[in-house]
Image 1 (cartoon, rainbow, N blue to C red):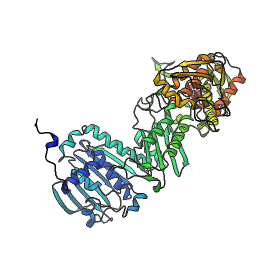
Image 2: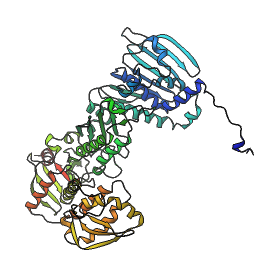
Image 3: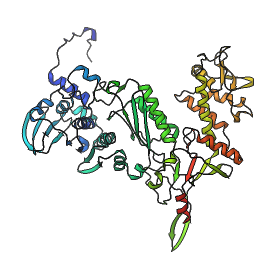
Image 4: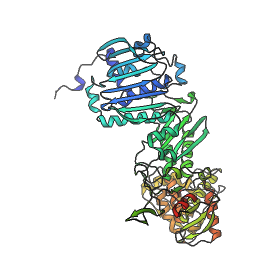
Length: 600
């Protein structure tokens, strides 16, 4: 180690970087890995009006990437210019950046790829069958030659990052990089179902879509069973944004978020606010750690977005981001929570890849043993394609006529179309109470109340029921700090609580719900502690807890009139098919399934 201190070192002079160093730095920002190159080339193909895009790769794209399209092509005399930095046909002046209508616009993609690998581009602008090929690379001057090709462009990238060993060493290997490329192609295929996409890896076909519609694209990628269980998302218009898409029923769920796709004006994006909003919509409807297949497409005026915030163009700012995100959350929540799980008539088990939630009941399956037909119990998975395609009237809970109770737990009811519904009375009441709490909160906060936890003399009082004797609750200093700004939200739920010095709080009222009638003070301490949890979803959590603890219990007998009231109230909720915890509360046996099971 040198004894010379930093302050004694001679100052370095500021100099202009060489052109090749500038190009290498810029290329490193745009082309992070093979999937980045594929994304840029697909953007160019879509901008060229392609209806067919074929992507091929070898060794995860590190050895070869090829993207071929049938777009308008590039004139021969402009091929070399197209590979220069900051050259593009998509924008011409600074005002164009405020109204971007193309996927590419920075003019850096081809130049960045050529700085990192050998680039070969063959393009034709007519149907004459003759094209021009241009080859260039980091240490290779441009060379062009004639070549046969129909109208369109083929871009081939060889030995990516060969001249940048440090970047190549950071890649995760052929299999992981191939998976990233597959994710990119899949996202674009779902964002543009009208375009035919094909992806091959070392000659093996991994993905191919027909170019028809979104349902056909999902069927090609995920299978016919998933396509048959799609639920419409929207259309919903808010703040100038049109939200539409599909979400697969709750029978299909995955352990990762990689099957949640959001596109803005046809561009797959990674906007954290929109993804958080989508997850907030489906999180109460699925088990913890599970995620649905979701394809959401947002159409906005180009002036309402800014795509020029990241070289990769996967990030995007929306002018009305909070409003659009809230609408997306509502659309996802209502679509996924409005359809019951159906028991299929088929007795075959679908693939466990997609069907991971077993139903609570099933019809006996037939099998043959030594020439005898027998029936045996077991678990059946939801997802038969024929029965998952629900009728239009099944997208909301129909008017049900109660028939009775099973084990004082399930309400058996009949729909006008003669389907049999099993309704979990506890979970149904949970959903009703949860909805009532939210409505009560919105109504209370809609008045002009003070922003502090302690009401003023002329301010509206808490909608809860007063305790005969206020309860003193002591929390930890951390819990007290978290609870203080939440007191007004709690008061809107009927939970009146005010500071009493230090980390002490005085509870004066609790929510006015039937389950509180026995000993309302017994719930107060638990609610105060749960309301002080360090969580972004504390309000939803405490509403869920209140509804769960005060709902009708399993094993409680109900008269037919009480059953009818419960079913009618459930029908009025926004998401009547699951409880606030995300568990299913309605199970439907279609008349066709019953007929097949009993061989009518």
